[in-house]
Image 1 (cartoon, rainbow, N blue to C red):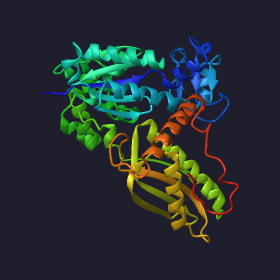
Image 2 (spheres, helix red, strand yellow; image 1 turned 180 degrees about the horizontal axis):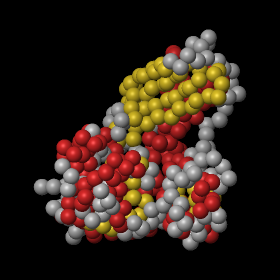
Image 3 (spheres, rainbow, N blue to C red; image 1 turned 180 degrees about the vertical axis):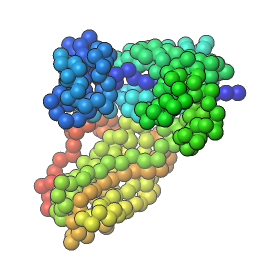
Length: 396
């Protein structure tokens, strides 16, 4: 029996987040990425701006010429990350089998949901869209099909704020009249090659043999042969299969300074803790990363007796690794800290000797994270490290 995959795509995500903060932007052409006079490209734009030909990756100066009345915003990745986490929470409650493909898109296996909970795949998608709008205030589109490829094409056809279901068995017929570049991965360079065959639609690609496509495009030709017929993967890599969470800092100048290095490491540890807690993970395997002045990268890992996700333990363990690894005579250009072999926060062995204090710490950081979600993840940090001249651990 074939799977049913839903592709959720948040519509003009960066713009939608900005509009939640500034409702006066609603209905106006908005471009996120920087000032219209700067070098750089468009990160996102509203549908009002798209009417003037503006699109993602367009140079900002071109965008300003195309739409001089647009409102240009630099954007805030911390804001977008916070909203993305809110949507992830909704998706997680909706289905345990999902993959977060990027900050604003998800692949979700709904094979069982529409049989036992909802009347149809479309009803399941409608419920999900409604919950995201109700809880997060964000518009979204859903594509539904028997694999990732078809679901993603469906969400393109559903935009803006719609649902498009492609029933199993109808893929090739439905794709045939669509433009060739509706297929993910078919860009200008591929279209240029296909032009010699007179290709304009997916149906034109379907008429070409596998040999013709492979001869012209190599291995990508076989991939395109399959995609044009709606053949794709239905594999979902769930969040529980995610490998790691990490944070790092690259310095403008190499440094020996242990106070500065420790300060930055503490910040990295807090970012890792914030990410772990928001994604409901803990980890017992922690890694320090150092890149020296000769661009050589060194990693130092240790697996501890029990998994953690609170800043208290993460900072202590990061500093322990640093004490073991730091060589005073070596300049450092990058420092990082990460966790791997992630496991759900509510499973795994606990520190039996600190159960009561651990519960208190969990409650404390739950309140801290609430404040960070409201005011930005860098709004609250543990202080006091930069003033100390010796390597010390965080005291309980």
